[in-house]
Length: 136
Image 1: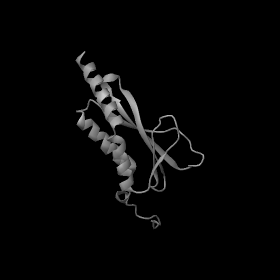
Image 2: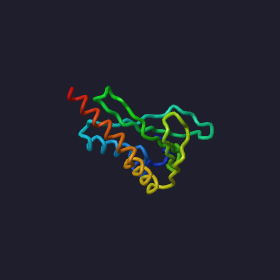
Image 3: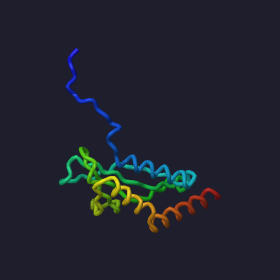
Image 4: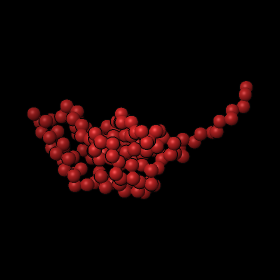
């Protein structure tokens, strides 16, 4: 048998922003008793200046409203390094105006988006409409 020259890989030492998005999505499900859920989708955008770029979009989903989904934000990061992680707020656009350079900045931006008045209003409306749909 030939000796392997590949390094031993330690996946546990690498964090992914997607892990944080899933945690927050699970928190949303728990907070709403499953009335609202989430979905993280890969973007189909191509970036001429960003070869090796990963883009993930975060949607709030209302299963009781025929799985209506509302785009909340997206994150963009490089395949080969974690930072910077950029946040985008428009579903169709490819602008990512908010850049983070470490996990503290990333978590602060994520918290700002998820706890904003606008997000609260969207979630409360989706929750109310979902509950009304379940009673009819």
